[in-house]
Image (cartoon, rainbow, N blue to C red; front, side, top):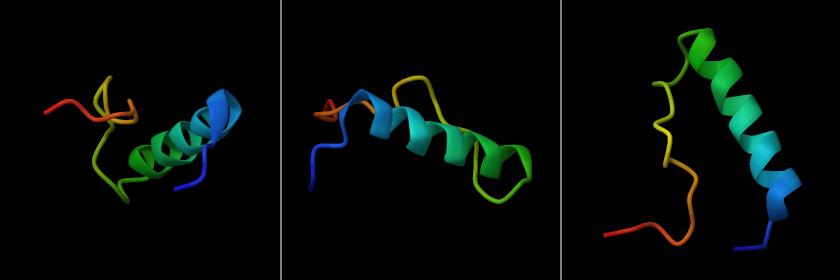
Length: 39
């Protein structure tokens, strides 16, 4: 995967937060976009 950087992750989080507000996806947890994902 490409490195999105802080701005990229902020943009993705913003889009997913808006989608969750519309009921399209479940809400993101606080650690949803952390990388690497903890096991």
